[in-house]
Image 1 (cartoon, rainbow, N blue to C red):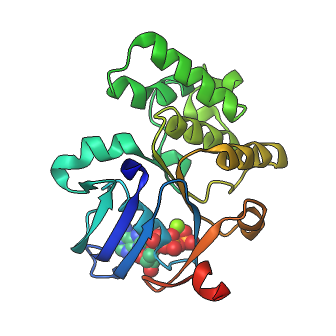
Image 2 (image 1 turned 90 degrees about the horizontal axis):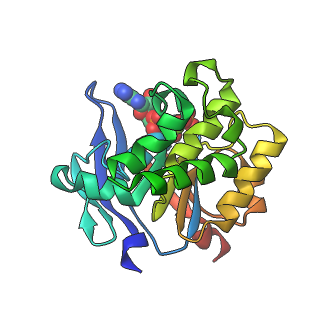
Length: 223
Ligand SMILES: Nc1ncnc2c1ncn2[C@@H]1O[C@H](COP(=O)(O)OP(=O)(O)OP(=O)(O)O)[C@@H](O)[C@H]1O
Ligand SMILES: [Mg+2]
C-alpha cells in the first residue's frame, strides 16, 4: 500500500541561525514497519520528524509520503496521511477544551459531525483521557497533556503515525496503554525515543542518528 510509505532522499536542513541539523538523511520506511529513531540529545531527531509532514521543508533533498512529494502545495494532503505527535504537548494543544483539540483535525477534514464525535470518543478512550474531555489544556498535568496530544493525532486516523518521545512523562498505566496502541497500530509507525525498554518490548527496528546523520540501522548491526 504505497500511501503508508515514507522516504527521505539526501535531506539537508539548516536552521535560520545557520546550524546544520540534518546533513544528508536518507532512509525508507515501508508499509506496516515500526521503527524507532534513536540518538543523543541534539542529534536531529525532532528536526527530522518535523520534515515528515512538512512543518519543516528541506534545504535540499526531498521527502516523499506514499507517492506524494512533501512540498508546499501538497501539505494539506500530506498532513491527512502523516499524524505527527510533537515532543512538547504544549505545541499541540491550543483549543478551548480537550474535546475541541481532538476534534480539530477531523473537523478540518470536513468529516460529518457524527464521524467526528465517534473519532473523538474513540481516540480519547484509547489513551484513557475520555474523562478529561471538558477540561482545558491548561488545566492538565504533563502526562494528561501528553495523552490528549496523542488522542489528537489518533483522531486523524493517519496512515503513518510519527511520534516524538511519546512515553515521556507517562505513568505506568498510560505507558502500557500507549504500548498496546502502538503494538496494535496496523500501519507505519515512526517513533523518536530514548525509551529503550519500549523499543525492545515492542520489537521496533532502529535508525541511529548522530550529528544530523543516520549512522546505521538495526538491520546493519545484526548483519
Ligand atoms: N529552532 C532552532 N534553531 C536553531 N537550532 C536548533 C533549533 N531547534 C533545534 N536546533 C538545534 O538542532 C540540533 C538538533 O535538534 P533536535 O531538536 O532535532 O535534536 P533531538 O535529537 O530531537 O534532541 P532531543 O533528544 O534532545 O529531543 C541541535 O543541535 C539543536 O540545538
Ligand atoms: Mg527531540
